[in-house]
Image (cartoon, rainbow, N blue to C red):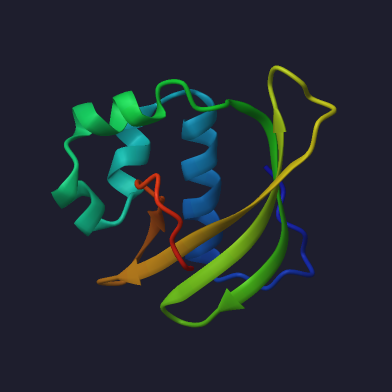
Length: 117
């Protein structure tokens, strides 16, 4: 995973994003589950979480392309992802991170219903 030097992200957030996506690419759900927002862990068991992400696309490359919002408690970054099954394909998505008790947590959308950011 790459983070361009021109993008000014808090160092602790950069480390969490790198850790999260590295573990996602290995299907290490034990590690990624711990980085998800506490309320999502309250709503969903680790077993549910593993089933939810079991068939998710794995990525060979993840690059932070832009920051759309970032303050001391909430950051949304734009990621460019390359799937392992098709490394030349680019997928762009927004990744939201929220700071709780001085730790950054990942927010995933767990509903099939459209939700605002």
